Image (cartoon, rainbow, N blue to C red; front, top):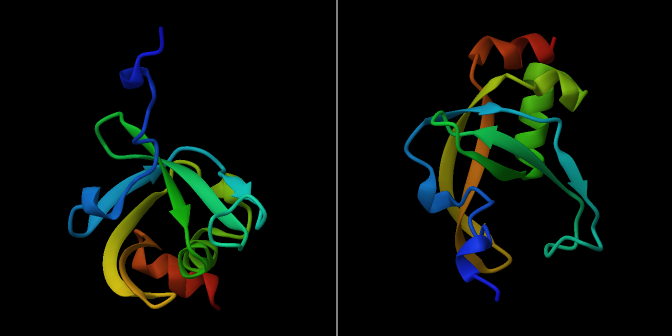
Length: 117
């Protein structure tokens, strides 16, 4: 017997689950999804984040988010583990369709300035 409830259909953090200015903690170095495996045809980076209540979800990072996190926390994602990040959802046009997109930023605003000097 297969129980549908045994499958975790909610392993990914979805835009509708993100509260305004939500703060989460990175819990792993992430996993690169190749362009061939990605539904977007581009390489992606998924990182695990703790929502603050012990629940861990995968957060797919878009290029803007991974660049901002690298500026703030360094190029090596292992250095991101235990760092807190701020999430923001923006509605934007993606391939001709209006979609909600999650953007991730270093929590410490000074982190971005340090990374760009």
